[in-house]
Length: 109
Image (tube, rainbow, N blue to C red):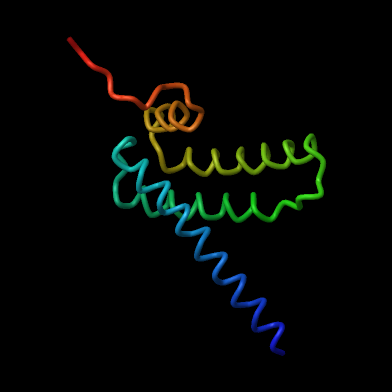
């Protein structure tokens, strides 16, 4: 009984941490993507589910197999994001997440 309580508390705190991680990421992206309140809430839910699935993957899986699983999970996340974000927002998200742009202020002289 005590063990099941400890496991439940551990899972609950891990879920809170995952949710907080997703919330922090989306809050950082919100001004960059010009997200509405509704989009922000949905994006947090999608990102939370994505992070939960990624963290569920066993560490014992070989790298090749791990990459296949993460690719499938990311594709699922991207298809969910396509339902809530505009094309322009998706492009900006891709640029930011894949480090295709330096996030350093540009000085104009």
